[in-house]
Length: 114
Length: 109
Image 1 (tube, chains in turn blue, green):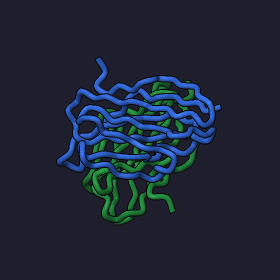
Image 2 (cartoon, chains in turn brown, red):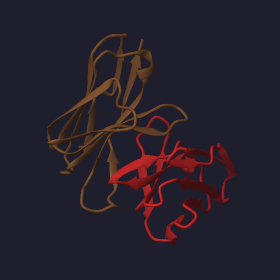
Image 3 (cartoon, one colour):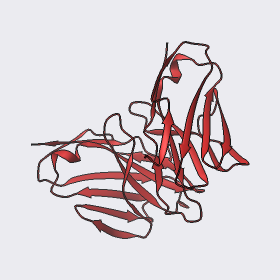
């Protein structure tokens, strides 16, 4: 089984709809991240969490919210989806304690907002 | 100025040649540096990391770090068609990674 899973893998929705993207991990890592990727722009950090009680905004948090339900689960919500939120979304996890720890990515969710 | 900048590419190299990828970063306090490879539509996967000045080799890959110049590079020796991908440079600041936009490499058979 994959260490970092994301659901759904693909989602098409309409402008104004609320949607949730879910991420689960079995790596036991305390740190979890949500990124979006647009062609030619690399990965942009939306939100990150260093433990269940710690939530932080990233570079592009407007229009998004998150919930850290447990150490292993980190959900991203779009309260009212808009077309420019069409992108590839990645969840990632990383162990704390050392600056050279590897960051592991989920398989991604392709979101299309019509 | 973006935190992490990469040469825009795309970079096309013949099979067997050396591909050279460059990355500069703005925060002198950056602690460690990662190179990820990403195939189209897939998630990034780690190639190697470096945190000390100098060179670090792993198989056909060599990472080079110069903190004084705020520069990190990746060399791919004996390039293979399977190396065709986008390469992302990432820099650790405050225990989170900032990514460059990536350089797309195409290896011509």
